[in-house]
Figure 1 (cartoon, protein in one colour):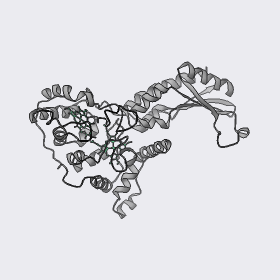
Figure 2: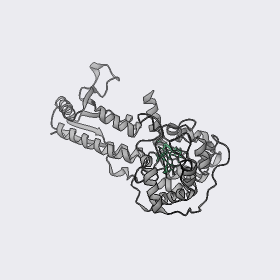
Figure 3: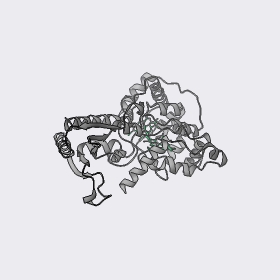
Length: 356
Ligand code: HEC
Ligand code: HEC
């Protein structure tokens, strides 16, 4: 069940990277927003927009507090480094259809888009921000740790605060939208109404100006390019397959991992006697690391527990692991990048030691 969910998520991520249907088909039929939503969004935001890895999209305060333009721009830009992917290859008609579908959850009058600037004092805004916002949105507006709604995060904070210093958010959100979020809050989420918390409208305008000023700072969550990262970490071993497998296990245990199981690559596909003994996978895990990783992004379940393959091919013994840094790019999650960096170092150290 869990595996199915995770593969659904991976499919969603991969779909985000792919071209849509050929443009001839696009022109022919009016795009179906519900179908597009199921295809591209539901795995993260839930079938009915009630949230999951992504924040909920069906709550009335959200629906009335954001404009159609914000929704379109958010779909186009995504939130670089924050899990929410960009969808640059959808046609305008497809994005419109998606927005119409999101609006079926709360028909009514959404925020009208405007470019009007809200005048406030960003210096006073910063002081207020430091006092009222940092605990959830982070000292630099980098957002809460983790993603969306569920899984292993603390129960008293069921929805993780989005990043406000994010280029995708700032490009999509008007001043008026930020102000509406502060005035009304988002009922059903931890985001409070600061009007009800006793701030004056002027103070709220000051905070809006400060949030807007994040635009002048470099985007710390921007993710680089996957092209520089090889798909796998790989070395040739001078030892036999058996010796190398034993050395991989020793190296993993020496770094506080527990060996979960060792199997041939063909295990489950052929009867034991017919499996090639020269192709072996070692699975290992460190539960502290696993829990930390799952709290940041449940999709790491796709490539954890750790596995290293030892295989003999044309007389050479190769030791190989998937390069976690390459996977991190796929997931558009800056926090996960740091963790994947750590994991890549561990793989390199284990493989170096085992092939020494
Ligand atoms: C208790 C935690 C908490 C506090 C304190 C808090 N927020 Fe939020 N904020 C959230 C959450 C959670 C959301 C996402 C709500 C949703 O899913 O619609 C949010 C949403 C927002 C949004 C809309 C972002 C978007 O992507 O649509 C803005 C803007 C915002 N907060 C600004 C602030 C500012 C500025 C302050 C301080 C004055 C603040 N928040 C205080 C938790 C918090
Ligand atoms: C891989 C998971 C994932 C997918 C796929 C995804 N989203 Fe998101 N989305 C997120 C997360 C996580 C956030 C919160 C951003 C943050 O934490 O800074 C988000 C934020 C948003 C927001 C802004 C919400 C707010 O409070 O301002 C909108 C709108 C949105 N997504 C719409 C969509 C639509 C429409 C699709 C499909 C075309 C989609 N998303 C696909 C994970 C995802």
